[in-house]
Image 1 (cartoon, rainbow, N blue to C red):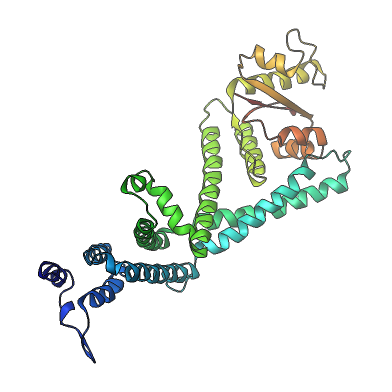
Image 2: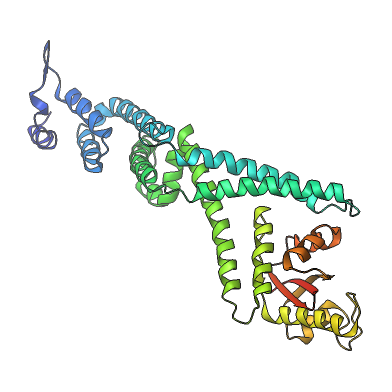
Length: 360
C-alpha cells in the first residue's frame, strides 16, 4: 500500500495500523476493512462517511470485501430498526396499536357505510342496528384519534437516524450495480429513503404506520378546521352551530367529510322553516312564489353553489331530536350522510327544522 494512503488511513482510524493478530501483523487493507465495518455500523454520520472514504482508497482489489462489509452493515442497521419498532429501546411502539385500530376502523367503515345508504323502508329495528354499528365505529374512531395524538418525536428521530445509514449503504451498493453520479442525483431524497426502507420488512411496516398516522391526523385536522369555522361564524345561532358540530362528527366517524356552515344556504333553510311555520304547511315544495324547490330557495337567498339535498322536520324540541328523526328516515339519512356535500345550511323557526346540504 502506498505510503501516502497509509498516512491517510492512520489519520482517519488512529491506532488502526498498529493492530496485530496472533500470527503477526494483518494486511493493512484487511485492518482497514475491519475497522471500516465497525464505523459503518456507527450511529454517528461522520464516522460512517470516514469509513466509506477510507475503503475507496484501497482500490479495486478491495471491492468484494467492501461489498460484503456494506451488506453486513445494512443487516446491522436493519436489526437496529427492528429493535426500535419492537419497543425494546423505549416505552413501546406508538405506531403498532394505531395501525391495528385504524385497519379495523377502515374495514368496519367499508362494511357499515353501504348499510347506512340502504333503504330499510323505515324498519326501526334495522335502523336501531345501524345506530349500534355507528356506536361501535365511534369507539374505534375515538381510540384511533387518541393514539394519533401520541407524541412520536422520539421514535421518529431514532428511525430517521437509522434511515440515513441505510440510505448511505444503499447508495454505496448502487455504485456496484453501475449507477452513475448523474443517475444518483436524479433520484430525490424522498425516493432514496423510501427505497432504502422498502428493502426490509420492518422498514416497510414503519412506512405503512407513518402513512396511517398521517392520514388519521389529517382526518382529525379536517374535522377541527370545520368546527373552528362553524364556531367562528358570527352570524350563526347556537342551534345552528350545535347541529353543525354534531352532524360533522357523525360523518367524520364514518370517514366522511365534515360540513361547514354557509350563511346564504342557512338563510334559505331558515326562510323555509319560517314559511312553513307562518303559512301552516309542511312540504319540500313551497307555495311562496320563487321559492318552490330548495334549489329555488337557495338561489333566491343568493347562494351560488350547488344545493344537493334538503331535510325538513316539525315538532322536535332540539337539534339532536331533529337529527335523530332524519336518521331514522332512509331518504333523509342518505342526504345527511352523502359523500358529495361539503357545506351545510340549517335553520329553525318555531320547531320547524330545515337542513340543506350543498357544494361550493
